[in-house]
Length: 493
Ligand code: ADP
Image (cartoon, helix red, strand yellow):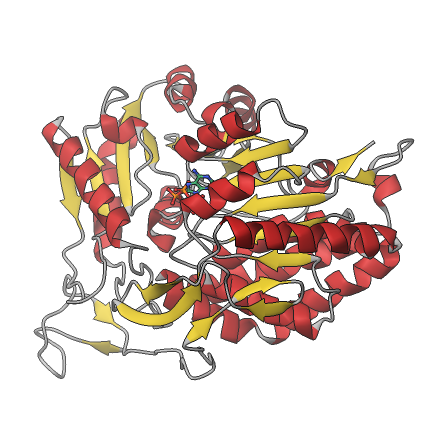
């Protein structure tokens, strides 16, 4: 560690006059990028019938990483047929303990190749390596391990009932946790005896394609998982395919609505995990420094690119000035920059349209009367970046308190009583997650029971476990992922 600035050895400008770490970039050589990736259908990479390819870029540098095959309606059909064939001929006939072996193998290979996956995730998505290495990869492997354990015990998960697989599942995932979302979708489906056609997001297809190599290494029977990159239109073709038994979607509420309409009146089962506008509530009796760390973890690490991000801070009026002062100091210390640097806290924004959306919403926030405070760090010249931002003097009517921003932007509101805190926390069309900080057990239990959110974290934030169900209320969707509840979404009785 060295100290820059006036007292530093090299006399460079400092970031807020604070201690700086020397760069510690993770080597990217471990990732062997191919110039072109095909579709993964029936156990192998194939050329798309569409004949089309699209580029995927590194949002931190705008460098083109690879060309990726685009699946059109004919490709979707080919993938669904492969999944149907594998379901009928192989996967649905395997006993649970055999399915479990494949899931265990996939989990172990993911662990063995975790550094490679983490680097690729950070390259393609812009998230800090610390996040992809310490969160995305361990959780993705844990998901396969957890569901491997269930595959031969489903009758214990649903005592007295006889769970059967649904058939072929079409799954669509977003760009914020590309590999982890693939694991969340694929592992329970396979554990329960279903086969899968999965469409990754258009800006982050590479780790899902690397996962296909893992399936090959694990000798997963061909057609059990098929991965078809493409855009929203590819997703729409998949949803409309008549030979699917289940659709699982994670993404925006707008697209979730379209999917629900498309699926209405068909035999397809549906689960939707959509947007959020979580309240992170600090009561005056909270351990404030610990809470500040939790708030920072809840919104700034990962660029606010999480649907459960604690994007609304509700702080009790008596401590509001203190909390805001500490928060401003803390965001000055955030290290924004190269996602592959192990010291980086905040990486790149995933895409240019996402960056523009964040800029637009913050502008609206300021026009509506919010006070803007941003980290004055130096941003890289290339790529898509946004400064960690705090908006104070926000009220529930403000756009920034209602709309999902999906960026490193925290809107601060104040409250006086626990009643008012619960009321403001619930004053949203979403209901995915919430956080509460207090040293009184009774207070957080009371708050958790009143807040309509799928997850409520107490004195912590953004903690996940495969055994714990995750999902929303209201416009955050329905159905749960993880735990026994998550298994229920992939079986019929
Ligand atoms: P986000 O705002 O997080 O990008 P989207 O809902 O736009 O969320 O995208 C999430 C996933 O849904 C992506 O894989 C995207 O390609 C896909 N998608 C977008 N539009 C549609 C659609 N009309 N039907 C099905 N999938 C879609």
